[in-house]
Image (cartoon, rainbow, N blue to C red):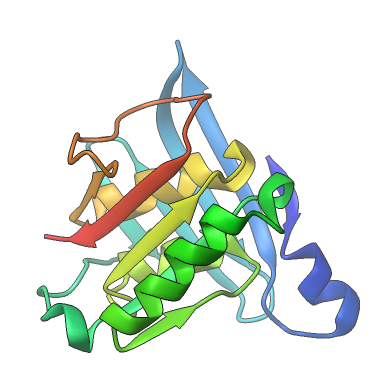
Length: 167
């Protein structure tokens, strides 16, 4: 559980923060709940049951060409000044229309799930908001793979890079 995802945003008055809850059973993510506090929007995803915003089903949108994509960037706290992360983000900015970093990862996952973003690139993020977001995106139709192109499922404590694209 992350009771205040976007803590820094909240502290400085930026209205991008929420609550992220992940329910696991035998190391499998079975339920993700994300609440967008500012907009009073409740997102729920159940493994095998779809993704919903305020009880209405949500889906990712059709894929766009890379140059037209708006992509989210999520970077873990422990690698804030990491040179490799900076290089990846810099290169990404040349390849897509825009790169967005909200500092509230759970809300970025919800934007992907409802079709407002076309992808997320993640660099060494913590699990508190990662796994509810991954479930939210996957249940909305996103394809989630690592940088070797392997499907990402479940918990991976050594996760460094993750690429999320819509299907």
